[in-house]
Amino acid sequence: MLFIRYCFCAFIPLNTTYPLPYFESLYNNHLTGSIEPLANLPSIEIIHLKKNAFSGTIPEALGEISRKLSWLDLSSNNFIGLIPSNLGYIPNLTDLQLGDNKLFSSIHESLCSSGRVNGGQIGKSCDHIICPLGTFSELGFAKAGGKGCTPCPAGENTMFLGQTSCYKPPIHEHVELFFSTVYDLGWIRSDQDEIIFDGEDSCAWEGVVCDQNTGEIKSIEFSLSKLKYDEDLFSEDHGL
Picture 1 (tube, rainbow, N blue to C red):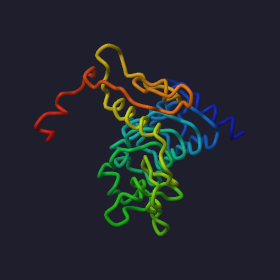
Picture 2 (spheres, helix red, strand yellow; picture 1 turned 60 degrees about the vertical axis):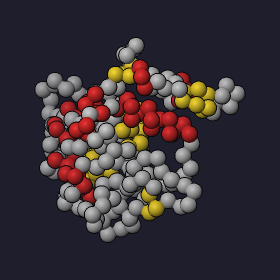
Picture 3 (spheres, rainbow, N blue to C red; picture 1 turned 90 degrees about the horizontal axis):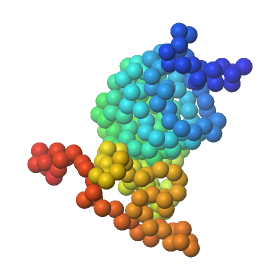
C-alpha cells in the first residue's frame, strides 16, 4: 500500500484539486531523471530520494517554493553542479543530506551558518553541510557529536564535495567537471544552440578525442573563441 501511495503522489498533476503530498519517499528505487516537479510542491515536508540515479542540477526552486520542507535527502545520486544558495532560507529545514553526488560549488553563508540544519555549524567550517574537497566521511558531511570529515590518504583525492570515499580520479571525471562547469554557466556555442554534453559516453562529448582501441581519452579540443558569454564576468569590477 505504501508503494502505491508514493507512486500515486509522484504522478499527481500539478494543477490537480487533490491535496498535495507532504511526504515523498522513493528511497533506493533505481529511479532516473530530474526532480524539477518536486520543487513545485509548496506543501511537501519530506523528500527522501537517497540511493537512486537522479541527475541534473538541484532545482533552485526548492528554496523558493518548498517553504515547509524539513528533511531533504538527495544523497547517493548523480546530481551535478551547484548547491542552491537559497536552501538556507527554508525556515523548517533541519535535515539536509547531499553527499555522494557530483557537487562542486561553494556553500552560501545562509546555509553554512544555519543553526538548524544538521545540528548547526561545527567550528567555522561548513563540514556539517557537506565535506570539502580532499576529505570524506561515511555520510558525506560531518555529523554533530560524531566523526568529522577525514582528509584523504596520500595519493588519493576527491573530485567533488561530500564524498564517502577517496580515490584516484580517472581522467573522464576531470572532463565531466570541466564540461558541467561550462554548461552550468549558460555559455552556448555561437554556431549551435548548446554545447554537446549528454550521455554517459564522454567520448561522444564535443571536443573529446578518444583512442579508438582502448576508449581512453587522449585530448580535449575545445575552442572557447566559439562561445558566447556574459562579458561582465570578465570586467574590471570582477577583478578579472
